[in-house]
Image (cartoon, rainbow, N blue to C red):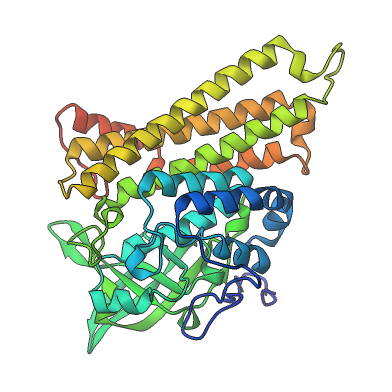
Length: 415
């Protein structure tokens, strides 16, 4: 349990990784059996787990993190290594299949889906490390979960043998069970532009401030991480968004902002699909006030449901189209043009916005019962609205993307 909090002082949450083997990585849930070797097998296992995940949504939200036994089950199902290269113990699935896994888990519960997406996909931020360092972080014989913060709210300065890091970073999802935690910092300023460098730390060198009391995605444990003049070896640092990846895999060649945007959008569409599932289940038995039949027989509900379903399918199809195009470009080792990046980012932002609208439609259709704390519809709505707040899918993305499509080039530092 977190330590007691004194007034005005953030609580310090314990760093706990259940089933951890020496040197990092889980030992796997008892009886987990053979590790899955394909994305299809992971999806089958997620489908089996989904009812239990959905049934524990309130527990996950109240705990503000994944329960240890559920984390073990997700690890055993392959959720955290489906995107990892096969050279490092992963499945190495193609991007469209990876996104289907993220969406399927988020359909069962948003916080679980987000935690899987971050823990199983954030390794790409570290793909520019020296190969020996990357191999040490991601050994082929162990599961490894990463957590980190891209927002550069710290400073990093050269020191003998490496660097010293000072700062405080928020939104470090899954930090309480991560095997490695990385943070992004400003190393200096060149021509008015911050020069960034990420640093990787083992969890026993990192304090976690218990700050995650939020309205949505409450179960992701996205606490703050402070560091004060922490030492890090040079080979455990990387300049983000530049250079060639040290691993030869297509997913690492996709621009990180585009990749993250598609992953975030897949979580959003999963949440929205879960909301539609919930409202249809409710509609089959709910009889609205002064109605002669169930909600499912109401013509207005039927029309709204069909519209929401169509919008969600369009959003999902667009995300899939962009994922396929990105995978094809990366597999062919072709460069990603500004237009490629703009259309991908715009698609992800639009799909996330549509997903939020669909969840809102489901919430309103549920009527008065939607506002109760035990209604999954209010939770789905809060969760997907939290997703829309991520900077990678903010509405301003459309203006930047439109500038590119209008021939004005990219004027954003991260795009």
